[in-house]
Image 1: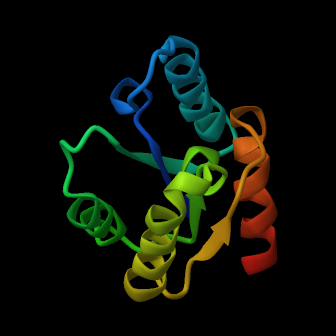
Image 2: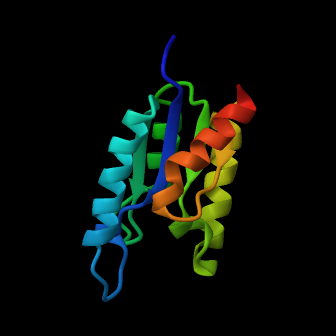
Length: 125
């Protein structure tokens, strides 16, 4: 049996403008990679920048097309910030177009990211 595949779409903490320390968020993202693996989930991060260095549509579309995904998790940095509403809409519509059978998951924090994916994988499976 193959591991379920989860695509995590989120913000690259090192490419989010502002006076803040991205190190704790980057460390939490790395920790989530380990937790996904420990849960038997094949997860891949698709981290996008808000610094203008990405063609976000192209980056997300390429990630969505890499393989069939059982679940797509959209991170809070994209969903929770009102200023990112158009980005959130874009990602939802790209997911619908390029991975129409994938469950969509939302986490509350990086601490519950694996739980959010598992919740949707159970519903889909």
